[in-house]
Length: 433
Image 1 (cartoon, one colour):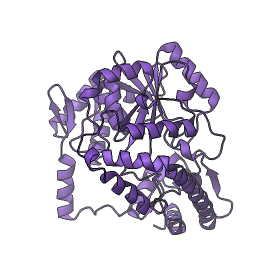
Image 2: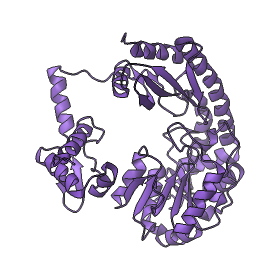
Image 3: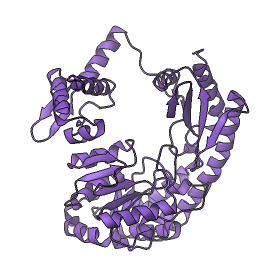
Image 4: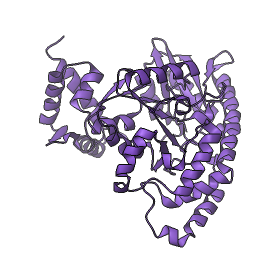
């Protein structure tokens, strides 16, 4: 191994800082996590960090770690002032987002429920319950029993403003655990919270103390964990004393196979925490998530619960409780499934119109995305840059010499924009843009 390996690490981190993939003011990954991710020694990482610090890219804060400086913003301002770079093009055709189609959400209906919640004057004058509003947790119990066959009590549920907020409550309860495994490196928010608490984050490592899984969205492609694999994972976790965090993200949209039971409902021991949210059903701005704790962790949480403040909006919890009980959440799910099925047909038709009837397409398990494999002389990185400059947002599944495999989502982009966006993509691939 080269004695200058630390310069390679330094150069990689420097590029991430200048491109703002490591944002100004954010905490740098811990030395331990960098060692595991890059498969290099502690000395190599430390030398790279010292080099970055000496050149002003990062700064050390005692007993806290290294933080990214604002050097990227300063350079960007200078380059913009000198006219050497242009502002990034506005995203006009977003094929990468898996957000909610804005036309599917009934704003008028939601506003009525919010107004009804705000009329509860006396209730709105008090702080929210640390564990979440009681009527909302009761509605959640009925919801997960009907949709995921999970039997629980309202007292088993903890509500928070997003999964990241819930992890900040959960991780301090995990005494004696120091390592966490993720399916891949894409869940940056979860990795950040765990590493901030001193955990070593790994990828696909079954020896870890905590195993974080999204059974309905195991990969970018949307692979679903089969029942046999779920049972094997539960057995392994019980045998080795691991805790499973089951993030049930996108389970509502697994449309191409029979519904699979949740890990929480299959578990016969006290080793699964269930995490759920509504970001794929409602609006991303409605930041309400919840976790269902097994008895052991629930007992530990209750000893500290009074020290925690509720982070989710009280008014939105009250509104969503009634919204669920009146059947609107399940109606919204059915509405989205119908809408996405229609949009998927239009996306497939648009791909064949632009790239020919024999183009290589494969529909994703979730029913909201498909893969398109096309020939190109461009590398994945070159394609991303040209696409961004042309107002396209793409997700690349794989990049091999001569071909690229793209993941195209139909959820956020209006159907009438499919073909115009694909025409631009074809022009880029053919080198005419």
